[in-house]
Every structure is written in C-alpha cells, then in structure tokens.
Image (cartoon, rainbow, N blue to C red; front, side):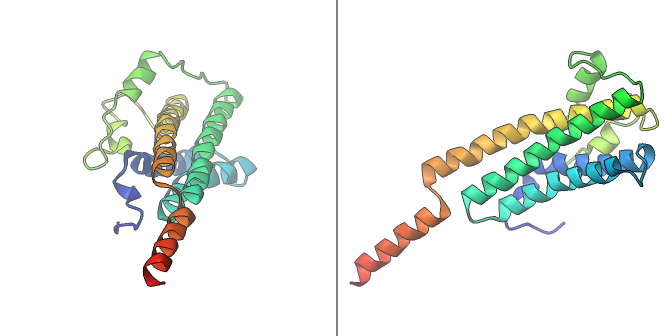
Length: 183
C-alpha cells in the first residue's frame, strides 16, 4: 500500500477498519444472502467505515475531517446493529461484554505492523470462522473496540481544531499577514 497524504494508514484506527472490512466481506459471503438488502447494507457500511476515514484524513479542513470521520464512526455502530440482528434472527447468542470469550477477543494484541486479527483471531485463540455465533460476536467485539478508538480519534481532531484553528481561518491569517507585509 502506498503512503496516503493523510498519513492515516499508520494509525491503529485505520488498520482495524481495514481488518473489519476484510472480515465483514468474509462473513457476508458466507452467511448473508447475496441478493438481500442486508448484504448490500453490511458491505456498504464496512466500506463506509474505511473509506470515510481515509477521505477525512485527506481533507484540508478539520471540519470536513470531523464530518467524514463521524460518518465512519456511525457506520461502525450500524455494523454492530447488523451483527446483533443476525444473531437474533439466527437464534444465536449475543455474548455479554464480560463473557470470557469476549475478554479473550478484546485481549488480542493489535499491532498494525506485526499481527493481523484475521490470522490471530482464528485458530489458537478459539474463533472458528465456520461458527456463525463466534464469528458474529468477534465482529461485534472488533466494531465495539473500533468505536472506542474512533471516539478517541475524533476527540483528537476536535482538540487540534480548537488549538490550531481551521483551514479557512488559517488561510485568512496568512492572507492578512501577506497584506500587512506587502502594503
């Protein structure tokens, strides 16, 4: 992958969005009717998570970055609901957040430069992608973790905007400085 202008590809929030996108694709291909509205919605929600995060990072405007990153964050919430609906409709169990299986999944080391959830979560850590209940609960756990990271990421963008100002505001300052020095 090339270096993106926004530098987002080096962040945990981006890396986990990519993993969720990849795993969601596998899940939908295996367990969701490809001709259903749910299939389209889940595929598009996962795409929106990743793509809006990237697009926001490439924006000059903190306001646009906040808006697009907020859309990405909301899409993770949408995916969580889709997975909960899948479990309910399938008569499967939603694992509680303190369930030992969820705690094990939450404890998986996430290092964007070394380990990928798709490899780490499968096999020795007990997630069988052939087990619909385990796979859906893995996705809920990952989307919940990503939502937490996204909230922190959004807070950082907001803090930067408050401290440094916005794109237009800074351009206006530079324009005024230029006018003062040239008149």
